[in-house]
Image (cartoon, rainbow, N blue to C red; front, side):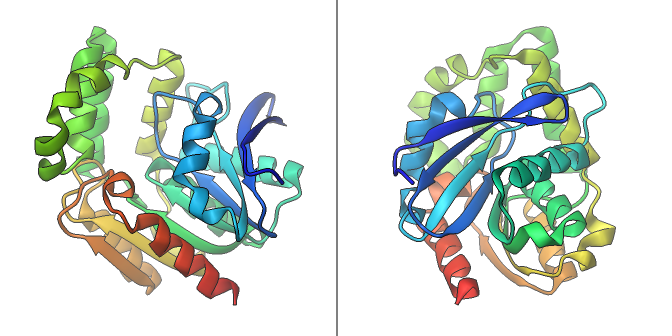
Length: 268
């Protein structure tokens, strides 16, 4: 397998799902990203660089959401699409990293189809809705409905990153805001609404694989408490970045190393 990413479009449930594939390791690693205004296909080189540290030990599969998202789409539906794509790729007993909305999907995947997941990292995510999630989604959707994409972009940045990061890189806010308009507005809004359907908390005990939870104390999107309650319910290891926000995967220099070390330890 090449270290350069290639993208496969996989038929799932009457639509298609794009999957970036790269790396040379024997073990599969499935990455489920969070809610984004951009698709994985055009971000292939950036994502392969972001996760290059995994490529020696793993073949990496970064799953996008399906191209067509129905109005009634739920987190469980998105997880089912991911499972169908994994089946089409012949993947089972994969290490799975789910971040934010991807973490909500990863929980459903591990609960409903445990044969697909050997070990699990849940990053900056939640197992049920809470006031922080509801407030974030409400603000973002409100900006979208008004067509105020600059406000949406500023809100996303201010919600995702810590105060210290924004102080250092705040001059980039106008650029980030300008680039934040979704390519497919309706699809993004339906995916945002899907975040409000996460409801795995009462079934978390059905996750049988080894799990690491990573949270952030200053998370304004899902809240730090959401990570704490998942780890307590599972009785698993929790690492909290107390001074970071929802984008701790960007801010924390050791985020990927922490994930990689966990997966390698579990594979031994």
